[in-house]
Structure formats: structure tokens, C-alpha cells
Length: 279
Length: 136
Image (cartoon, rainbow over all chains, first blue to last red; front, side, top):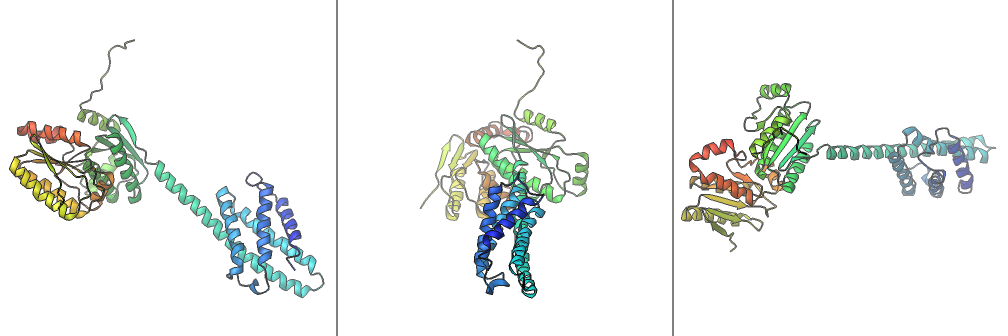
């Protein structure tokens, strides 16, 4: 019965969707919306049969769920709100129920039964949609986290042969790995002999973070370069000593400037003031 | 059997490892090198491992051993050209190779060795003031 009514369902649904105040024309065009809806209704109606009405796990439903999942994921990436995505499915349910009502006017009992069935299916479908939607959002978040880790460890060439690496934010094992890899790679590429690790942006140093720092310094030494840790704030110095962490075989400086001065000294370079500007 | 060539260059010995080391090869290298240091009275050993892409704890230990043995025979060991991945692996394995001198490339390693050998009586001062890539 629903097969025959496919056209009217689609029309009604589109009308519902378009009349919705929250329609996001900035994110999706009407044509796109229509093609998405059309695809979904076709799949839905095509796969409806008397037997699989209650069982959403049966194979007949997988194309519908797939399409819904695809739509939900695209919407999550495009930045739709959960409410808008939810309304997308719920408005279909409304359209279906309305068509059903028009069809079965005479028998209230049957109308009720059929409505219940449709209701159950659509509820299940919306749960699926939501699940996928949230999954899509989580993927987005995960990707952003990765990007942040990537961009938050820049290696700067301060001078020929001197690299600086300002670390901002907490240092965990994963981050240390990225920092270490980037730093060592850059040392090889530039042939630098001194690396300055600036930790003024690290909020706290505990034994684990110190362990990571020591690892990075040792790895740099193995490469044949020297590593200076700079930007140690008084509070950090206090915690480090209280925790009994031995940093005595690591060169530490209070500021990046003093670390740079030390690096110049090691490389036998000198920065001095010029008396008169020559033109 | 494969052998890694040990070249003599003045007071130094040059070892360039061009193949991936396996355990037997490393052990042979160890004994060959010690024999060679003894025979030639070399003052410094330069090991280039820039072509080595895989190390395990055994290899790390062998490199450490070679350095210690050379030091007993009065020759400094400099390991040059370690790959980043190798360095990270050794650190993760807990082998910081203390006592092994390191340099970025052959040239820097050579300069390091020369600076250590030329003024042997000031060797200790050198360690503290100018040559900080040396582990204390």
C-alpha cells in the first residue's frame, strides 16, 4: 500500500521539511535535500514488507540504515545541530502517518495498528540516525585533536645550527613521541647541533613529564646534538626538586634568551652592539 | 663470511656500516675492532651508522661494549649519523649509551675526535667546557 503512495509521501515530507523554520538553506540546497529524501523514501518503501515490520535487524533493512547512516554522517560533518538531524527523520514519520490517515479513514482500529507499526519503525530508524550522527561528530573531534597535536609542535630554526621547540600545553607520552620525532627529524634535515626545548608553556611538570623530557634530551644526544631545556619557572623548579627528579645531567636555563646565549657561546658566536650604523 | 671493513686513517679507525647488522656480524665487528685498535694503537674510533635503520637491545649493547672496550684501550669512540628512529628506539629500550660520544655526521665526528686527541692532557677540561655532546 505504501509503495503506491511513495510520491505523495515524498511530497508531503518535503513540504514538512521546507515549512520547518529551522531549515538550513545555508548548509544544504533544496535539490540536495530532495535527492537525499528521495533516496531514503525509495529505499524505505522498497524494503517494507509485512514480515520485516518489527525486526530492524533483518537484511532487508540494511540498505535503509546504510543510507540513513550516510546522511547522518554527512550532516555531522556539515555542522548540522542534533535537533535538525532529528527533525529530518521525525518529519518523515509525520508524513507517513498523515498518508496512512488519509488512506484508512474508515477503520480506526486498523489505522491505530498501522500507525503503531510505522511509529515503531521510525523510532528505531531515528535512534540509528542519532547513533551515526554522534559517531560522525566524534570522528570530527578526533581528527581535530590529531591536527592540534600536529600543529602544536613547531620546530623553529633560530639560527644556523640552532633549533628551538616551544612546548605549549601538557606533555603526555603520545605528544612526547610527536615532539621527539619532529625534533630529531629536523635535526637531521638542518644538521643542527643544538636544540632548545622551551617549556614555559607547560603548565605543570610531574615525574612523568620530566621522564619524557629526559627521554627527548637523551635521544637528541644520541643523534649527536645537544639539548637545552629552557623556560623553567620558579614553581616548576620547586616541584622538580621536591619530587626528587634528577636533572643535573641536563643543561637547564631559565629563559629562552639565556639558552640562546649559551648556544652562541658553545658555537663560538658573538652578538655585539655596533657603534655606528654604516650606510 | 661477511665482514665490515675497518679503515685506518691516521690515528683513527673508520668503520662504516653499510648493511643492516645482524648479531653474528656485530660480534665479529666487535672482536675485529678491538684487535685493530690494539694492533694499530689508534687513538680514536669513528663508527658511522647512518645506513642502519633497525636496532635492537643487542645492537645497542654491542655499540656500548665497543665504546667501553676502546676506552680501556685508550681510544675514544664516536658514533655518527644515527637515524631519528634508531635514537628513539634506543631511548625507549632504556639504552641511552652513556659514555659513547655522538656527532651528527662524519665531518662533525672527525672534528670532535681531533679536538679530543690533539690535546690529550686537557681532555678532561675539554669535556666540560667545549664539548657538551659528551656525556659526563
